[in-house]
Image (cartoon, rainbow, N blue to C red):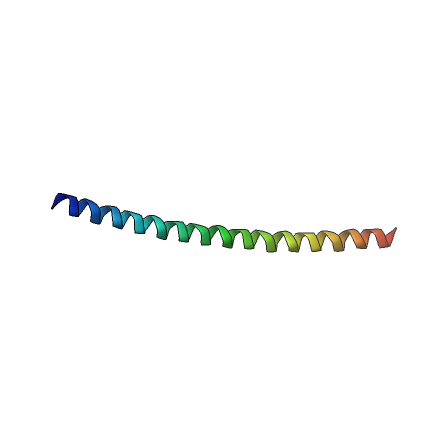
Length: 57
């Protein structure tokens, strides 16, 4: 009986670790996507500013 309860606990722990890994990977992917879009916006803003400055000179 004790081995059966231990096995059930280990299976539950394994499933929760897998679910945590999936959720963590999705969170990292979304954070990276947000960072990528922010950096792209900043790069376009900087490029436009530098072009404006170079056109004035």
